[in-house]
Image (cartoon, rainbow, N blue to C red; front, side, top):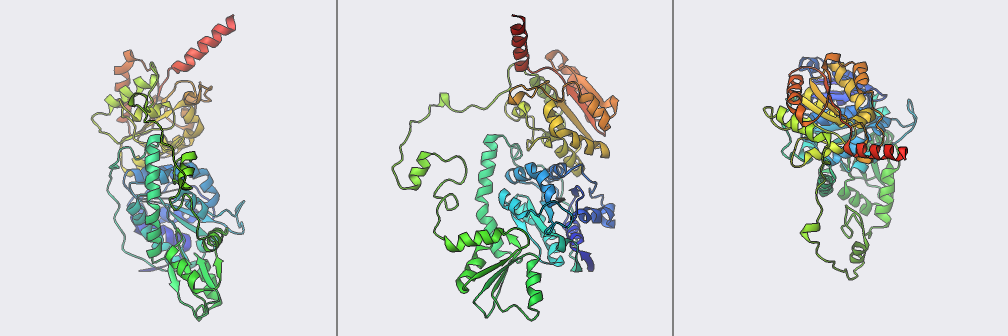
Length: 532
């Protein structure tokens, strides 16, 4: 079957045919039509593929990660500046990895037709150290969207598709493939994968680094990267994405120069090495910043470079004098073995912390539902991922608990639970709550309110005295906003309340409120000092 499609429409159709369960996006030219195409697509409507707009790019990215957490395939779309808004989750999602396929489609805007800058999203892909696909025509745009989910699941990382305005808004005939079925709901096999506490994040980051060699092998073997012979060896050409079309338009009978078409990153080293060996000079054609040109100058002129890339120095972690000495071939002093009694210990909630009572009740309330449905956030309560509670399943970035719970609920993980702190709620949780209210998502949100930004030293929380009004103002029904006092004598009542709200097929808010014990001690000392 064939269709005449814009580049953005080709990506949308490729995602549909590739088995997506949802698309998440905030409108922004030249990316808007991807989501609009899916919203209006008959098959997508019949299958009820998620395609509602998100409040911003950050919530869109987190919801897509939530859907991918639940094992389904999700696409998130935005223009290049939108990636700045979503960058927190984008960078951390590369470290958590994914369970179902996740594709991040970013539309750049060279010449600033409708934008405030010309930033090149390939830098973000390189920054996050994930595979990047850059189509040279509409057929490739479709094909890349179709296979990108498989590539994402193969390496368990998000994959970026980067297009530009000309590709987005030009039209061509596209040959369609057979539509793939949606993935089944499936929780991650590694229960710690999405909890980015430092000890876990370090392990996940090592996995990402170890995968870099596999990304390059895949890029070297990718059908999207090609070597074209040429008789004139005076120049070798590297044409990235749509610039291959610009080159061929100048040579309708075939380019006389050897050419490497680069449409998948990281750079295909084997193809480019061959090009550099067979030609006298290199010309790089790329839409956007001179990222490949910069890499090529260093690659061609300074081949014998040692450091973190070649393993002379560690790729991750801090450097120190011993690492440098070893790299230089100098003797390395061996320190004393650290006794077990003084080794690092995991963090723990303070004695008397209200979060103890919250997670004790939550664990009891969901015992019949099983694990894998509690989405948490950044705060003291993240420690509940550890013994003795083992309560939470995610901790990705500020505010992600609500939006990831929503995305998982969209995928069919119902009920889903979000746990967020009072300060984090006002920092980044309110927009996610608005998304959930707009769709009346079946999620229960626990805003654990200790009236303090406790993790960073007990600063006054901007949420103090406002949470109920914010929730009601955003649209949560007053009868599903509950404030409770989390202490042991109220344990049974809190368990019952959580169970009751989990049965409600919409958005509900539970606010366990008790001042942080450390803040309370500080406040007492301050009041005593003021009396003296």
